[in-house]
Length: 276
Image (cartoon, rainbow, N blue to C red; front, side, top):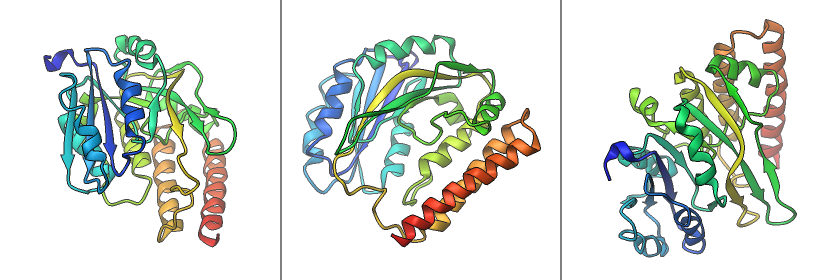
């Protein structure tokens, strides 16, 4: 298919996920139209993940499988971007599943060719009922009004990469890539950089993009990370710099309240994590 005809590239980095990667892939292939492509980038898996995903190499012309050396998820996402042909790019983690009928319902939104589309996530904890992390249907005329809303307390799902359609031409304009070698937070920094590059409207939609399944009680939220507090404080500064700079219609008092409230929460959570 001609590159000009690919509307969306879905990039999934895979690593040691032989037990569940099939679920995520099938959830996409069951609804993947010809004008979208799926790119699987294996990050040097040490289990049988490569064998599992290899069976999809020739299943459809719009499915691509790439075998990478182990560089971490950021390196494999970047390789996926390098190979993406879509007008828009989105990401999924290897333990995610795409919501049923999501592509059918979301792709028509891109007819207006806006700079960014943000969707919701349904989370399934290992114990307990599912919960929705969502956004309301809205259109922000610029990244400035988007930042105004965020500073004033709107939940805009700014951290994840797995609930957004990014315009590839914007990514390519500055060769935007994920920072490699970070334990966590590289997705946030990518988003903050991208928000600064938006010149057209940003759309939020109540549609849910993925099912985020917690596979075990051991996760990034409990894994020991060296220098965790300083990393969190660095991410906090990057967020504050991004949104306070972009926001043109909030007062100094509103910005100060945003910084203070956000800082206290980030600091408290980071200290609790380091001392646990």
